[in-house]
Image (tube, rainbow, N blue to C red; front, side, top):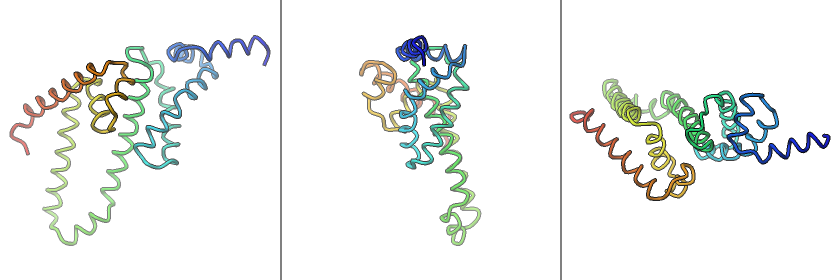
Length: 200
């Protein structure tokens, strides 16, 4: 590598995430891609591992998620921090992965096979229907709140992130995070009350 190339590389190293994203979108610069990967691959892996509890699967997910991020870079408009955008993609990808895997496991579970021996088909169908209603109800409610509210609720109550961790992701004060959580919870309760007032 000659002096000019080294200088260009050092300059890229100091670029912000947003600058690197613009460069990748416009020129597909491979070094810029590798910089983004080095900055975020471990964070993506750690988040994936917290979901799947299996290092090999988490490594596969990290690769898949980063590929999805690369293919979606043009859609990043800078409305939020790049790290928040990365978190959102990682979170949604992992949730989708687990939802699909759990569905398969439920269908093939030994518990279901054993239950079938002792419980009537009608009772099993009723139990499954109730489960589907609950899942559908939650998904319906979450679709009715804005993505930021949905994400902050999931971070806190699904991922178990602390207020401080959420502060860092959103670059907000502690009071602002608590207020957003409160408003999002109130909105969910309100929607649930309206839509499912007389539903089990």
